[in-house]
Length: 325
Image (cartoon, rainbow, N blue to C red):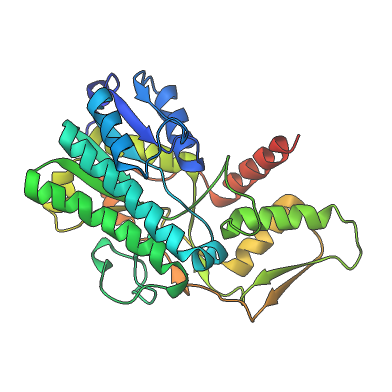
């Protein structure tokens, strides 16, 4: 396990891009709770990350010492498949503008957050970091995945050409407070929470909830507060050299545990208190058959998740209920 170096970073000027999203807000809470007192944040109206001129002007004026890129356009299977141009363009522009401007302004350290969807659809399980670009991607989220892969390679290329301390972290499927519960654009776990909650409140004896696909695909889920702790741990303890000189371009963050969508639905229905039927629409896509992260490398570096899945779902449902009041 590495020796923590909190004091080295706690007074650094850190730009957190995407601080209002589920991931960014969790990172912000974690850093502030641990005494970080020079966080820089900007809303979209204050700084449009898609516009290169605005980003470069911001970096030349603020000169952040560290950068965490949690800003991204995200969504579930439906949104990824329908808004393909938006997902690839917006994410490419955000990451390219920030990474390049960070280099030009002399940023000391940058961590770019990607997604487990960067790995090939039929890659061996669990997903090791070296499986990146080894086969075809899942079609439904290919534009988003390509954008994230470009971000990984941008960080790696800036390191190899200029020696800068820029690298990428790949979280598994995330959930928690401030998640997106919109049924058209959300990921599977928050969508299920909302579906079961609304169905429970209908009080119909023939009540049922219909889910996409077969329920057979397996997924891994990480509570977002654990992800925030992992990012702080990486910030304080892990450098680009630790990754690239060991032959990898990114570091996986997850639990190393998965379950089927059918099992997930049963778990969420229990937490929510839904007692009706769960049915499946086989005409809808399943997506990738399985996505389980190999997290052995980050475990060796000294970090491991703390929140078990059911506990995380319970906390997320409590937040969902409080947000509706």
